[in-house]
Length: 111
Length: 116
Image (cartoon, rainbow over all chains, first blue to last red; front, side, top):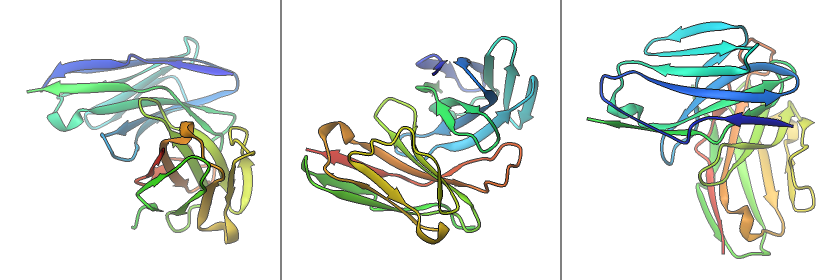
């Protein structure tokens, strides 16, 4: 089986930096993805880490430590529109392997 | 480019009735996924197709759920008969499926099913 743990809620103010952690337990780990989902909307892809280290995409960065079974999503210069749910998802086996999603972290950004 | 299309957007049925959802993936995407997302949870994969073949249906409740992807393009997901616990958003996603590094999945808007 597999399990993913991420905080259920995080709050921050505009312009701040927030880190959403994700720890996982799974066999056949291949990579860690992050998706954003606004209320009533579809999940959208943010980033993917297959190797240890930091991946940066604009205001968002994602980090992976395979030895610690741990990753995080870092959101900088927060904006109101960043208020959404953020899901980490483990990919097993290969790039075509299925994704297992966590329960999600609800981020609320206050003005 | 057009995104993943799903219909209907909303459906309300009574328990023991049947329901079907339709998905049209992004053109050229070989891999198609159906997810179930219960309120407050992450998406759970029900079935994954590679072209018109099933890659993974280990989480599909086969006694009541079925899915097909004829001709390797559109797909339908059916529930027969529905139970109260099937109330959820059913998301369709697609990806290139060529084995590229991140194999990003593109999600449709989903169908919100309410079973009364």
